Amino acid sequence: MHTTLPTWLALSAATIIPSVSAFYPYQYDAVNVSPSPSHPQRLSRASNDNRARSATLPLRRIATNLHSRQSNVYNIVSSKKPSQDKSVAIDQDGKDLSYMVAVTFGDSKEEYHLLLDSAASNTWVMGQDCKSEACKTHTLFGKGDSSTLKTDTKAFSMTYGTGSASGTLASDTVHLGSTLSSPLTFGLANNVSDEFRAYPMDGILGIGRGSVNKQDGEIDAPQIMDVLSSSQLIPSKLYGIHLSRASDSLSDGSLDIGHIDESRFSGDLNYLECVDNDTGFWEIPLEGASVDGKDAAMGTVSRTAIIDTGTSFILMPSADAKAIHTPIKDMAQNGESFFVPCDTTASLAFSFNKQSYNISSKDWIGDKVENDSRNLCRSNIIGRQTFGEHQWLVGDVFLKNVYAVFDFEGKRVGFGVKSSDDEASKASASASSGLPTPSASASGVARPSISAAAEKAPQGQASSGVATADLSSSGLALVVAFAAIFMFV
Image (cartoon, rainbow, N blue to C red; front, side):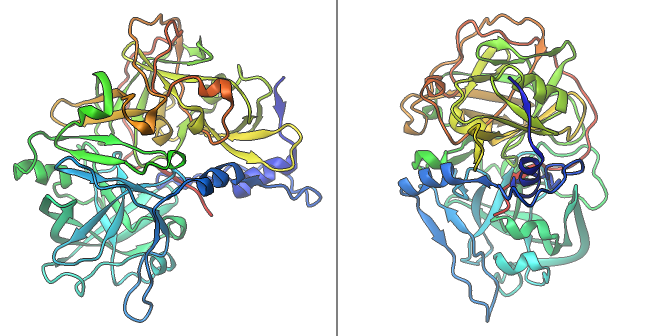
């Protein structure tokens, strides 16, 4: 039975559930919701927090010296130093919502955590002249920090939905890990919007494909992958990404720059050519999706997936999100928000190029709703169209289940099923091919509370005989924006 959420639950969804930023801060629509003071329910992070407390995470809080400079006061979960050369640890916020890399500039010893964003090509960091409220809780960079920093009067301005950052250009040597250093032109933000007050990152590291048509305010300079490649510091202009899951408590996330870590996946990489666009997005054809092995049919129009490390969840047009949730018993909907039983055994999978990838139940079901007799949890599939009507924004809830390769020269994205030798993905297996492809569909997702049956589906593993939708590529023009979802806490 499918139900509609009562007004009190819809109100809590609108006020407590995470915001999505692209910078496109996402908030659940409360337009048709009437406040009900007699039902002060809220969404709880109890299920996530309990797991986090049971795990030993390398949380560190960077001390703040208010007398001399501002420093990042957020808790950061540090990953282990990768064993491979030219690999950089990917840290996170402990909630699988923000994945970052620590960089240093010039001769400064201070670390700056920059959001790893495959849907953006510009890099910027909060500057020492920033007086915005958000800057007061982050590590700021300026002339007093590096003697090799060169500043410029040329302005940059980035607008992401309702969020924004602006300032002037600067250049200095950027250090990634212990072996990669290169000069880079980036932005020094002296004004950032209030949305950043809740985010742990001190800026953005853009690793997108690069926009063909630069928009006003964009930084018109080579991005980090361009300079590393042109300086011949890396053998190939590509990178591989392994995102770790906080609840696994392994903290082994890594960004493999210029090379592929074959120990992270089993079998061969499944490559997909990028759809032509002028936005710099890594956009690929989405062949299909399934719920419990059955096609989540959404018609015959082709769909594409924008693969984005800067987005925590999955955003898609409302009709597609409804098609995915409808087969799930006792699901509930309020506007673009969907809820499912916390103990649901429903399994979800994406299909790319005739290979199907399961999404772990740890990732696709979100926070538990307190004081609700139906034992509902929030779904991390959001029914909101962020770009074209057939484009999905596919973020970390999918990427945690695969090893992903972003190949600039080949203009392609590759997925590898996480290796069974990788403890972080004990649930990983191999992808199968030759799956039947009925009509059209697509799916992507995430979750904290896990049922035994749902956990049996290995993360990233293709289920044999899964029915998937037949979706071909489409080349739609997009708005330039990076996409990221964060939790307001």
